[in-house]
Length: 487
Image (tube, rainbow, N blue to C red):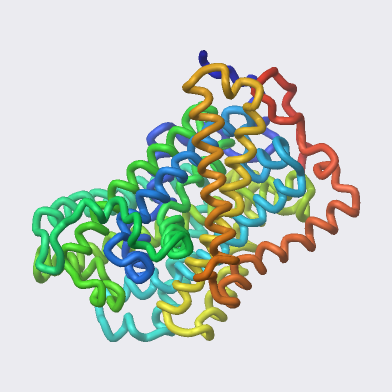
């Protein structure tokens, strides 16, 4: 039996965003750009191999399966509610407004932390194309990283159409380079280790469930970002279909790239070399194509970093826009530029805060230290709002979930397993034998807890949204769309 969904009226013009600006392939490109395959491989592979050893490919596989369940959840929730806030709105209407706020705030802080942590590598990788000594100068990296970030902020402020065009160029070049070099690296092979199928399964080699959880939490960071398509739903043509489809294709596509390069890394380099490498993709490129291959892959990382900074800024500003529109944050966040139809105030504020924190973060240590703590913290925050979305889709489709085998798998079993996996990672990270350090937990959960202050304030001062976030999401019967007040 086919799952039937209530037909909801698309967002009205008073909401201010440019409706219908993106199409199917735009959303797919955005999902790839959000996951940032080249950046994720360059920044995270040494951390993953340090945690999982040769079984990094297995950690990616066992994280990809539940992650796809979450992508399916986003797909079906997006059919019920087209909203720039995505999980913020869905969780509130399916579960509880407080949980919806926490879901939205978790995305806001994870995206902000990433923009802080990601700008420094953007400067470092860009400078490494021209001079290794310049790339080792922290303040030079800060200057270039800040410049790149401001260009991306200007594009996001200018409009989603020009942003999509920039993504077609940057992400198109990046993915083409990765496909060519990924195939070449697998064919080239190496002397470090011969391929083994056990790399893809890994059972018995993670050091117990806690060791597996640590590796999987890092793997979750690889995939994070595909859900930008959900935050662009109000600006996407035929959003009920295209936003979710783009996200699912993005998860599958980047998984293939991640596996190819991680397997090639195992074959070409020793674990010690991988963990200690400052630029692993450059090393791989130099082996595959001496004298020029390394620079080409570094170019892919630069494009990937710039592209994902842009999509991350889109995610956080659209979420803040929805929260401001609902009066769960200052209403000015819900203001859209009259000409460009973008959440201009959210873009300006987030850009300013990110730049201040970006410069301040350099006091914490080197690039590797900053990235290690940031990736772990973001992984915790990802788990929170992905788990809530997985639970929300099961509740929203509870009346039709078991009307057929297909519906049972897609809106009940698979998303529920994805949510359970995210909860498992949270529990193991906090209480397992190899639990995270106090600093990592403070950054991860502390940033989320800060959100309790504005939530308590707007709830106590009578924000209507906390009493009525809209009709309950229920796939069993049509509902009337909620009309949000004009900003």
